[in-house]
Image 1 (tube, one colour):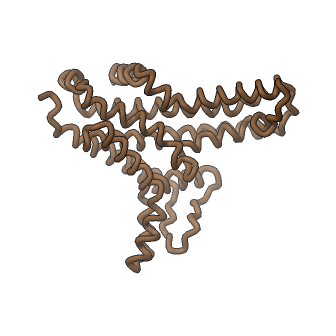
Image 2: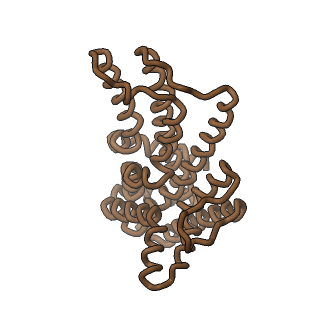
Length: 290
């Protein structure tokens, strides 16, 4: 299994042009932006808004590129594009024929999902570091006034919250990888995989609003309780329980499925297992080698 993951990692990052304009777009783009702002400052320009501030808040907010609606609505698209192309490309490039005969299919699927998620988390993690300590360090070198930072007793709590957000980002990336892989398995084309994976991601994020509108249309407002089965709610509820000790308030009167922490974790495990299982079942039945 480790060899499959390592091979997938090399293959995913081996497509340098695609990776540069998708998963590496955020860390490299942000780093370039900081350098440009630094040059503008040295030339006498005002860049306090771009380079000022503390280091810890941007680190957390950057992870929202994957984890939180509405910040992740469009920021996911380059990441999904990378995953969709690398999944559907297996069909168009004919690489499945070389991999499948020598390995069990469920291991191939699992390795691809895990590796795709790891690539996304590494890219977003690098972006968060650049947006926080790197940007803050550049600001201090340029003589910016030190922004209020964390007190010594607050640092532990911050890194605990940061670890939680990274974990949620990884789990969310697993679902995104499943969306891209499912789209590729169904369409077997890069264009079809791109469109379908984008659609699945948007539907999942907008599921609460869709259920509210549809429930009102058919006169069944309780349909919104179905939102409690979607990853978006489960991740937000998990975060709320860990950080505040209580369930997330959706703000919707008709929503009454306020889940406890153990139920939230159980549903997340089941949802991820079913999603991976569906992709595996489809792949098992496909004729790849002919």
